[in-house]
Length: 394
Image 1 (cartoon, rainbow, N blue to C red):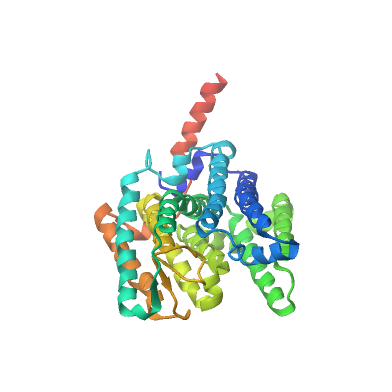
Image 2 (cartoon, rainbow, N blue to C red):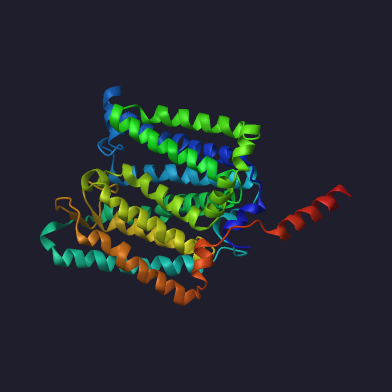
């Protein structure tokens, strides 16, 4: 069984996915945020000041930088725990099936990607410093720096693991198996149409995005409840829908959707506000790299290693006052934020070279099938479940 087909090992009714997503959101954004909110509240003189802190991602709350970093990572840690709970107790399948198609997690792959990209990231950072030394200030302070290094190596992997297992694991698998349903094109087009309408109304009439999104999701759930009505059955069985189903039933669909959504979620980062939407090329390109690596390697181990070391180096090596990571790093970049050619080197040069390196080392073949092949439900899995059910009945 390939990586996407691992989802078939568990329960996959639509409500299993909704319950798990709600559970992850609760653990990540609500329960996990309690320590951060309490710490910021203790620093606030009144509600308006607390609101101001929250709007600035608590960066201006006066918290120790290492302590703030830890509290931010803690939210991802709880989200990761609740993701695992959802997989094990709602979907009724193993955590390993979320991570890889192999019988067990291949940690050698994780560490190989971790060290390869770590070396590249540090070398590229040093080259940037050597090319423009006037833009960097040496910021080494022993005590806070070594605490930062410890937090980075011990806890940042929890943050990156949630993002990878959520996008390249849970959503990649979930969207992948959903493309086999004749109902998939209708619901995908509804979601895309809703996003366009919400964006349009917000830009033109300044409508509240959150309220419009909640209404859109509520309508979507209502449509799911009504999807067995005669009207919807006619839509699902139409020739046009059958053509759409053939078009969307491809591994390319979950690859592109998860990569774009992964990139767009980073649009809230402060560097996007400083540099503009062109930075989406980097974030979506990075999402594509992690997605391609996952599909070609039939597991998330390489992507987990790449993402972990990328954020670790970003945390302890170079910091600025306008990026998402503001830490006691070795260097402070004092240059004015601007879009330069250096931003596109990873996406258009380093990422392709990295894919070539991995393909040579792990013998990747049949790229077209693995990245754009049809997704099918494994027949042998159905037969195994039938045998098990017959044994239990007897």
